[in-house]
Length: 251
Image (tube, rainbow, N blue to C red):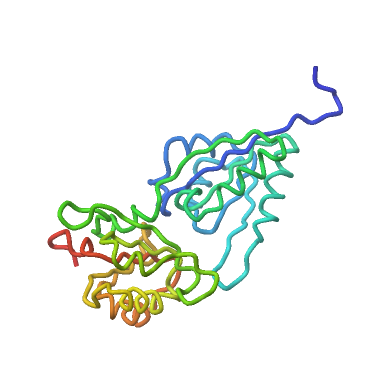
């Protein structure tokens, strides 16, 4: 029997919100929002879905702006746990899928270490859906038998980089770069230095899955210059490989 002075622990649902269009949020994600007392959300999550499916919920914004204001991950974990310990159902809503560069694993561990029940609702990953919306299949028969999704958060020459760019250059895989707008020039140079031809097709997609979506296509040697000239800024995804030209009639 529960002691009257003890508040039963709540629960946490880690929800991947998809690439930004509320229509690409899963049914399970909508159901989780409908059950939420609190929604802890990133700036790239489908915020319109909160208003539609969780009008009853308290909304806590913890977005991280590249090279700007952000909420440290440790504080995000604390907020999730504080609300759950108060007996609330907490939805942690992220853009894309929380297990792909979304620190979903860290938040899962924080909950389980604290003894808080936690569930996962996977999201539609922007790494695959945004290129598709721009007319780029990340794999295509005869062109690519696989895809590598990598972070471009730090440049190849940065000591913190853990990506083997030289191996990717000779892998014959499609390369999808997330968080790589500022480092795109360095990434292209590293790939070409390791043997990837300078004329390899590439594309950069900004603000994917939104009415503001923009696409620029250029050879690998020019993609950073073209993206910069177009004023491309995060969030943006770069695709490198022959698949960029796989679909006919797409400009």
